Amino acid sequence: MKKRLRVIVLMHSDFLPPASIEGLSEKETAPFQTEYDVVSTLRKMGHDVHPLGVSDDFIVIRQAIIESRPDVVFNLLEEFRGLGEYVPFVLGYLELMRQPYTGCNPYGLLIARNKALTKNILRYHRVRMPDFHVFPRGQSIKPPRRFHLPAIVKSTTEQGSVGISQASVVASADKLVERVQFVHDQLQTDAIVEEYIDGRELYVGVLGHRRLLALPVWEMLFQDLPDGAPRIATERVKWNADYQKQAGIVTQAAAELPDGVERRIVNTVKRVYRLLGLSGYARMDLRLRADGQLFLLEANPNPQLSAGEDFAESANAVGLEYPDLIARILHLASRYNSRPP
Image 1 (cartoon, helix red, strand yellow):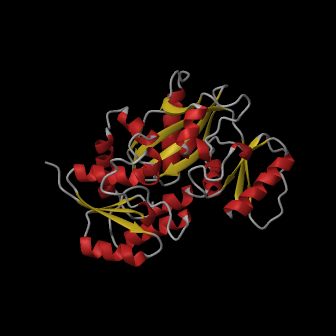
Image 2 (cartoon, rainbow, N blue to C red):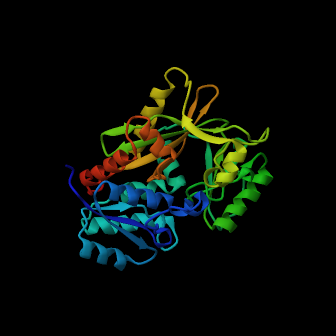
Image 3 (cartoon, rainbow, N blue to C red):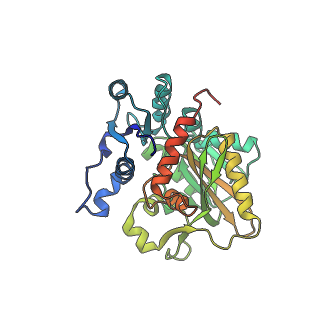
């Protein structure tokens, strides 16, 4: 019989799940689906589970750890004091308390959450990525010379495709300036402009610290978008179930990859994972162009973990059913060395 663990599940206070979701619609459960899936699965596995909602107070975390003395903190926190950039500091606090936790370490998370920093590190190591340029807030917006258009404009720090729409893909210098200004004004962050790569949208999950398991290559298919519409994972594509059905958005194991491409993908994602100092689990986003060129788009530590989402589905494809996946993540938490990489 496996050891019964005392687990604090750390999440935003707005997403504390109910004991049961019976009778609730998919739209009603969507905001806290991951939290519910993790908490309910841990309980079914026989663990002593304590959901903890926080928003801006370290004292709540400290008191819960002192009172509960958990074996592990299962981290589902995506923002603290309203900002995702503060989550690494929460994890640093857990490390100062010598408290094991799941997911990525604070160093890797801090780097990967900053798209500009990530891309500069990977460019130094000659990882193939789209050409890019950063536009800091408060500075004049001057399109760089010899930059490839069309391009896609994003926030440097927002996650989950926040702020990305079809209008994010720009084909002229004027539209580029307009969209950068939108990111500065509406998202209140720096903007990054990337060369738009037309190709297959691929995702690869990775589990581990030093010994890494790459999950099967997964693909997002855009089956019913209007002709000429860019095939990109916009905010609506990722989070709006009605729009997903309307646009024919499906994700599944990538089929008919050219010879040798899967091996290149696995080698690339493992190398990037190590270069960024990631740990626990992550998802890599890539584009495969028609000519066979592979481009890394983003590295995403602590990706969406609800049952039925891409990460869990790709794990299931190699025999890691959802409870097994949660158990693997717990096991990795116990084996993480908190010394900086």
